[in-house]
Image 1 (cartoon, rainbow, N blue to C red):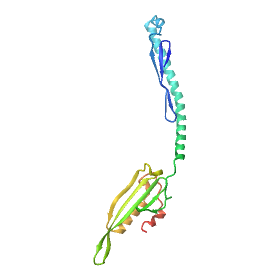
Image 2: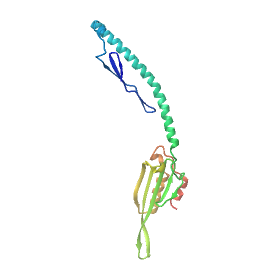
Image 3: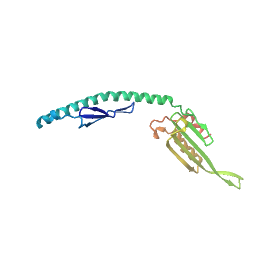
Image 4: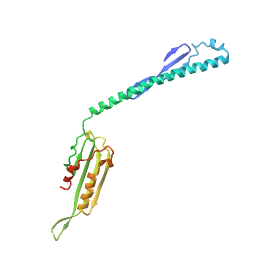
Length: 204
């Protein structure tokens, strides 16, 4: 708090680079130090005119500060861009398969720096006594597309389906090929198409 003759002033200025700026002042009348004798001797009309004049001067000072704040807006935007660039450079690259299908314990997986896709196929069988062996009667497919991130943190699901059952293997493969070959932009406008050249490995 700063005390001056007739009033005290509280200052609450704060700057958070690339985030916010605050210039704040509050003034309070100090009766013990104020001397109004010169003003109270003036006619009311003159006091009102002075009030308008002084308030207009305040407004001019305020507008000048707003113009100066515009310079901070531009500079803060530059600082923010630098902060984001530093954040990007410091962020380790997400582990990925470089758009190549790889076998996993769960099924098959393909990924790049931004997204990843997985699928798993299970063959459902029943034992045929006449043939004395298990015969497949349906196939269950689960697939998903997620965002990719370092250390698998904060991944978001884009699309997928769990345990979709097909009575015909060819129908299942056709459905899966459609999911893999379809441009991923359908799921996210920024997604790069997963490598179509590696789709032949699906049925292997």
